[in-house]
Length: 314
Image 1 (tube, one colour):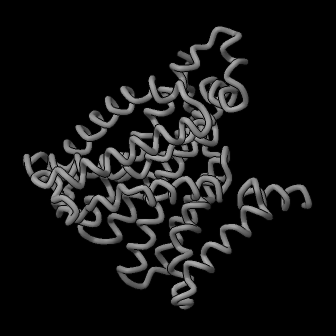
Image 2 (cartoon, helix red, strand yellow; image 1 turned 135 degrees about the vertical axis):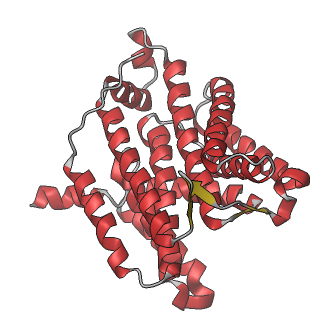
C-alpha cells in the first residue's frame, strides 16, 4: 500500500477555519445557537468523510446517514445497556462499523453508477428496518436515551465544552484529509475517480483502495454519529433514515465535490438554511428547494467554485 505522508505544516485554509471556529462562540448568545453550531460541525465531519469517497474516489453512497445512525446506536447500547465507558463504547462501535464496512465494500464496490447507488440505498434501508424492529435494544420507533458523555472522569455537559470537542475533531479531520489527498494514496484515489482502467493498467489493486476509502468514510460517519448521540442524549431511527443520507449527499454536491472545504461549506449552508427560512412558514420547503436548484444550475461545481472565480478575477 502506498505510504500516507503526514506533514505538520498548517495550510492557510485550515488556519482560517480554526480562526472562524474560535470566533463563532462570540456570537452564540444561548444554548440553542450553541446546539445549532455543534450539529453543523458534526454534519461537516460526516460530509468531509463522504466527500473523500464521492468527490475524490468517485464512489457514491446513499447509506451514510444509516452508517452514522448505526454507529451512534452501537455506542449508546454499549454504554447504556452494558455499562461500558463512553470512550470504550465509541471505540468498539468504530471497530464494529469498520468490520461491517469492509464486509460490504468488496461486493458493493464492484458495482458502478446507479447500480452502486441502489446497492448502498438498500443497505441503508436494511439498517433502518433493523433499528426500528429491535425494540429491546434500540427502543424501536420511539428511540432511546443515551448516557452522559464522560471524558477522563469529567462529565461533558456544557455546550461550550461540546463545541470545543467537535471543533477539535473537525480541524484534526481536515488536517488528516488534506495530507491524505496530497499523498500518493490521494493521487490513486483521484485516478479512480477519472477512470478505473488507468490505475489497473499499472498494476494498482483498485478494489483494495476503493475498500480502504469506503471503510475510512464509514468510520468517520460512525464517529460523528456516536458524538451526536452522546451530545443530544437521545437517538432514534430517524437519525439513520433515507432522508438523512440524501441530505448528506446534497451537502457534498452543493458545496463542491472533490473539494475538501466544499463539504464543510455545504454542511454549514444546509444545516443553517432551514433556520434562516423559518420566517417563510408554509413556503419554507418551497424556498429551500428553489435555492438549492438555483445554486446547482448557476454553480454546477458547487458553491466553492465562487472562490475560484474570485481568485482568477483578482
